[in-house]
Image (cartoon, rainbow, N blue to C red):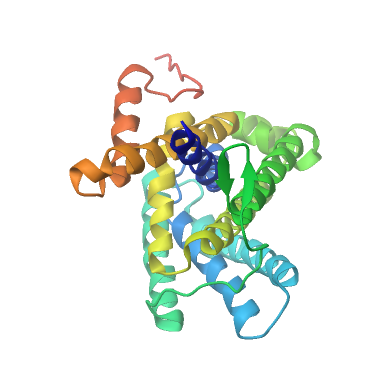
Amino acid sequence: MTFFLQILVTGLVIGSIYALVALGFVLIYKSSDAINFAQGEFLLVGTYICLTLVTAYNIPFIAALIMTLLFSAVLGLVVERVVLRPFIGEPVISMIMATIGLSSILAGIVHVVWGHETRVFPKVFPEGTVKIGTIVVAPVYIWSFFIVLVLLGAFTLFFKYSKMGIAMRATADDQQAALSMGISVKTVFAVAWAIAAVVSAVGGVLLGNINGVNSSLALIGLKVLPVAILGGLDSIPGAIAGGFIIGVIESMTGAYLDPYFGGGLKEVVPFIVLVFILMFKPYGLFGKREIERV
């Protein structure tokens, strides 16, 4: 039972980070009906920026994280303005292909600037272990979990009560109606991309503190896509629930099944679960069913 609880805690922590990154997928899809395939590269760039500020320039971690979030927000705004805004009014597939091209460009820049070697953050969180009953947990897991919970709660309140959050929800429901009410859809798009870049950077920094930093972090974007689809691409609560579900299933698979299959099964399980659930709920667990009348 202790081993099971240990794996469960690990799955919840990793799942919470998945949920945070999946929030970026949901925001962009809700605002523009497009899927951002460069989400993993946003995560990778933000992580390397924070790592460079801490290790190369000896900037304290908190200050480096704040600077990274500002950089990521600007990166999201620039990408939306330069790369994606020209595709407004064009077929959605055009915007999706643009994000695929963007992911390749960002990945290439990362490889040129930082290379392929795995790097580690200096000790940011307290060392040692924390014992919760019979479970032993590293402080980095506890801090990561609570940081993500705070951010998820803050974004939930932002979308529900702030003026911009309400404008984003209105735009997601009906862009034409939002325009008729004086809402700047272009501004909403820009804010959505900025937030997507910021949450990706936070997720990458937390994962970097847990597992180290290398180019494979970009694959988290591909792994988080099933999280967003599972919860429902247009549902923020769905992204949160999907993150925890996929995180726990992946962790349990790695602990109990990978030893019998030679490893690697936990990387595939999220997609297997996604296909199975979509067979019964095509719009995801919390997705809104669309009915078109012709």
